[in-house]
Structure formats: C-alpha cells, structure tokens
Image (cartoon, rainbow, N blue to C red):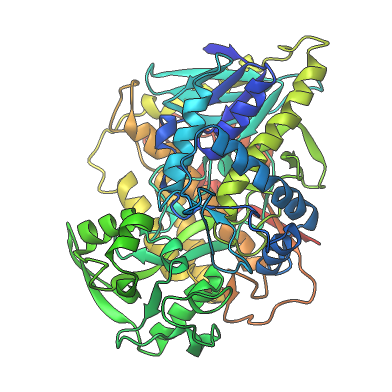
Length: 612
C-alpha cells in the first residue's frame, strides 16, 4: 500500500478544502489535498447568489448575528455565529485581493445585494456565478504554493483514528487512476466534503455530493449533530436539479401562482411589497424555509400548476409556481442574472425577459453535520475536542445555521471555517514537530480495512441480477421525496426509515459486474451509495426523535416548537462490530459484497440523544 505523509491532510477540494489548504501552506506546512474529483469540479462551483459579509455603513455585525440567530430558530450557537460573522468581511476582502471578480457599483465599490431573511443587503456577488469564480480564485491561488500537493480521483473509504496520543490520523483512499489503495497520514486531518442532499430525488446537488465525510465520521465512531434539518430551496427549475438562485428574487423577481397572483402574503410573508422593489424579510425575501412551506400550502389550496417534464422514461408531471422577472428588463437580466437566463432558455424553453420561469422546491442543503467548535475542531459525544481532527464547510455543524440557513451565509462559511480549521490544525502540527511527526502510521489497520473493501472484486456477478446500484439510488430519492420532504409526519418518517433499511439490505446483496481495478466507476458508485444510505438512515433516526417543529423541520403531528431548544446527536450503535473487517460474513458468498460496514445490518442501529 502506498503511504503519503503530510503535515496536514485535507479531504475535499471545494471552497472549505481549498481555503484550509491555502491557510496551512501560507504557514509553510506541507498539505495533501485529497479529492474524488478535480478541484474545479467540486460542488462549490455551482453556488450562484453570493457570500454574506457586512460592508455597507448602515449595516452592522450585530445585525448580521441577529439575523442569523433568528433564522436558526434557537439552534444557532452564538459564539460560533459571532466568530464567523466577524471574520466574514475580512475573508471576502482577502478573496478580492487574490483576484475574485466581484460585481461592482458605478463608483467601483463592491456591489452588494439583499438576500432572504437578512435585515440589510450584505451579499457580495459575481453576477450569478459566484461559486464558479470563487472556486477559480482559490484554486489558481493554491497552484502557486509548492507546499500543496493535489491528489485528485482519490475516493475516501475510511478514517483511521490514532491508536495513542501523538500518533497520526490516517485516511484510507482508493486511487481511481492507479486502481490501488493509498494511505494518507498526518498529525492533523481536515474533513471538507460537503453535504448529502443528493440523497433526495428532487435536489439541487450534483451527483458527487454523497455525504462521504459524514459517513466516514459515523463509521469512525463520531457523532453527527442536527442532521435532520434539511433545507429545501424554494426555486429550482423543475425536473432538472438546476437552482434558480435567490439572487433572482433579490433583484426584484416575484413569485406567482397558476393564476398569476402573488401568493406569499396569504401564507404569512406579507404585506405585499411593490413590484420590483424587494424589502427585507418580506414576501420573496423571507427565509427559505418559510417560502418552501408557503409553496406546500399553495399546492394544498390548488394554486400550483401542473408542469410536464419530459424524461427518457416518459413525461413526469410536477407541481410548480412561477418566478416572474419580466419587469426587470433584458439589460438587468443580462448583467445580473446571465446564468439564470441561459438555464431557463435551455432547459425550460423560457425567455425570462418575456415569460415567467416555472419553479418548485428542491432539497438543497444539510444544516447539521460533524459537530465542531468555532475553531473547526471536531467534537465527540461529550462535546470535547477530538485531538488533530477538524471539519469545515457543509459537512460540519459549527452552529452557524441552526435549524435553518440564511442564503449566502454558507459560501462565506467555507472561507472562514476552512481558514480557522487550518490555523488550528497547524498549531497541532507545530507542537508535534518537536517529536516524531510521523509516529503511529496506521498501516496495518489500513491494510485490513482495504482487504475488507476489496472483497467487492473477489465476488464478481455469477448470475443475472435484476437489481442495480442505479435502481437502489433512484428508489432512495423517491422514498425521501415522498416521505421526508418539506412537511413530515410520524408515519411518513417511520415508513421512510423502514424503506431505507430495506434498501441497505438490497445493497448488501449486490455483487460486482466490473472486476477491473482502474477507474472502476461501479465501485465508486457502490461506496457513494452506501454513504448516502448511511446519511439518510442517520437523518431519519434523528428526525423520528425530534417531537417538535422547528425551522426547516416541520412535523404535522408535532406542530409546536419546544420551549427548550436541543441539539440531536446520532451515532451508529455496535460500532466495534460495524468497523471490524473480520466481522463481515463469508466473502465468497454470492450475496455478500464484503464492504467494511454491512449496510443491511447497520441501518436501523442508530442511537440518538439530545443535549441543550
């Protein structure tokens, strides 16, 4: 097994991962950036609207903190919110100095737009391609540092915890290019792998967003916090997964029902604002959870329209409302929302300057994740920092978002927390340099883990199996769309949990078709699907134990919000057996893929507890 040792290993090459790598490299530390895709294909590239940071004189850090905590519905952690909000303007200014092409005002200042739930305009943007330009800026800056070595096309399999104090962390990965296992070791490891909202069939996330970091943490015996809070973005191009950015509403776009009436005021978001003049926290600039719930109410009242979306298997009928941008004019659309114009034209056959765009909600963002403190240090079940382990970005639960995220807070969080995690990690490495920085490389354990994963190749398909990875993944999306959506019930959550467990059993029974080792896409899809099912199972377990409605989580059987806000913590029970490579059944049996954790037996064994 190849072994690469660095000062800091960063898993993930999106906004958080690259920010972390840059901060560590600036301090002179050797960084290994491990990613299953080339950095410019990371999902940060798809972010459109902007990144929040106080800039205008009428705004203040106090207002930004207040807006964020208000949106978090009691689950935001004030210390983390204050730290991230305070650092946000500085990180955005640093990005501008590195060459980020922010949109400008007529006098040359950075242009700022309003966003939903914000009391003041504070979102820095680059037209409607902010994530694209942000990732370009970070990556081209990172290429200047010889201290950063990129390992693209490496699929993370397991997180190997230090056996003793002072030992290295290990990351077991599969090199798609070489077809062989690789062990990365370092005194400090930063997880920056993004979310898992791709588990839903109706989602704005790319196919690569499969909760890899969440699943690694669970398999390593670590908890996930508040993982039941899933944000549904209110405006997605139906059937495509393409986000119609909140910036379209910030520029003055309005939502209309099937009869052309603005409906949001009828569902608690009024009074109605003047056309083309959005106002903070009202109508189209309300929080995302409120807009998505208003869509559901409008659908129940018969105010949505049926939309026929053609697919390869026939017409799929969806319910939609309409985003009207026609009053903004073609010039404003071309300058401020060029990507939206292209998407609407190409995928809906609509010219936004003349015709409203059909939109519907889609799963978009996971508020919970691997719990961390304000420095990015991962926290265990007891709230204590795990030495040498850090997380940043959507995979982490810093406490910034609480029960519902404000748009544009997440993109700046990748910058702030990526840097914070790296600076904390380099302090660990600096202390370790006094002794042997490569002590305790877990090579023996890594080999045992790899043997367990590699049993997939030892059991090629010997029969015609009607089931497939693609079918299980499609069924997962349909189950979550139907039973774990904007509004849930106890019955729907129980039904979804049982169905996900059954999917895990089906996955455990699948054998390999492709016996090749190099760029074995089937193996990657298998690992990603197990991660998605693990995340879905954990999220459902936490959801079933939350007997209230709060923020983005709304349960019709428990419509009230509890007086005391509590965080959920989910772990996989019987962890030793789930992680023991010798505990899997006979690898020669046709029904056993021999993966490191048997999903058919692991699902349904989640433990959930709460803390204030």
